[in-house]
Image 1 (cartoon, rainbow, N blue to C red):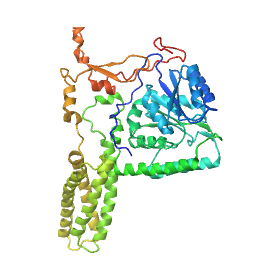
Image 2: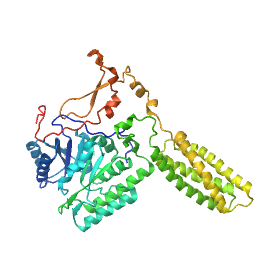
Image 3: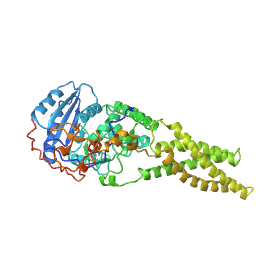
Image 4: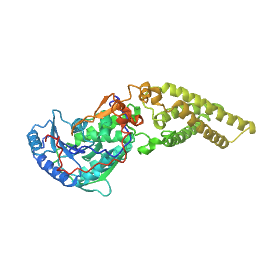
Length: 498
């Protein structure tokens, strides 16, 4: 599992900004391997459907995975005959490798793919990509297992598909319903950050991408589809199932050890641009409270069980101290990973040391309560001891959460720690830049940074409207209400050489 850091955190979702006429809004990738017979009918049918129903400019990309038949020649002929079709040749097999390569190089803001057999009804394509264009969702998948889906396939494939999704739910706590349907879409800004974390290059690519996206808190939209099984499918079921199970084990291990920087994929609070104007709102407070309560409840049960065991061969004070010590170590580790989202081994020893200090405070509260009980009665009942300890632990729990949040796992102000970020807030700083998009209908979405003094051209220019480079990069200066302008399929850009 890859542990390299991703290109950067994601900005808040917004409606995709309007682009130049002719610039594709949607790039549909068709990965193929030795599909000389099915490729041309698929592309012609898909192109006709998009031309008739899709209101924006689009592109169809054929991703040839090292085919050894005449598939490359068919793809080249389609590219020459149809302006909206492009051809991409890879010299290595692997559907995941093809999708990652083409998606990473595409300039379209919405990226999709579908299988060449077109088992999925194309009427689901527009509902698939619409929530990505509007800014509602990060990924979208077609689901053959939704209640309203209509599926025609044999019992063996039906059993394998449902069994595989049950495995994902049981082992990786996946909540999406269909990982293997070859009908998915993703926003390009999400793909740029998510794809470097996806290791698989074959059929498990889809599942790995969805699991990581879901664990990072990204929004996955599901579309019920009508699906007819292709009896001539070349997928090797046994080998694919074996590779998928190996992938499930690998991802489960990586998630358990915290080796994935999934925090880089989270959206900021909140996705609505208006929320960015709210000041002094603790980030993730509600989620942290829920996580802390769940961990606290389990820790309390664990503590009471340990206390009952230790009480069989020791006094109440020693049993309380031992049970608190063991449960405190487990509680700190669980809160570190689940409540406050700290992954990896960095700082784990320091966090446990601070957790032991918090444990000492809890020990003082509970021990003091037991001492007060023993002072009040010489031989208290075991149930009374437990009741007193529960009350004392509730008080200690509130204090523990406050100490964890403010001292052990505090939210770090990256701006305050990064001198470059602070300098970037000063208009007189060299880091304060004006970002100029590169021109061209298919120009990649990179930006050229240059120093610019608008007052040199217009003395009346209001310098308070300058934007920092970081703001331009994350899109916070854009008008969130900007809508995409429909582009007729036959509209062309005079700058387009096609």
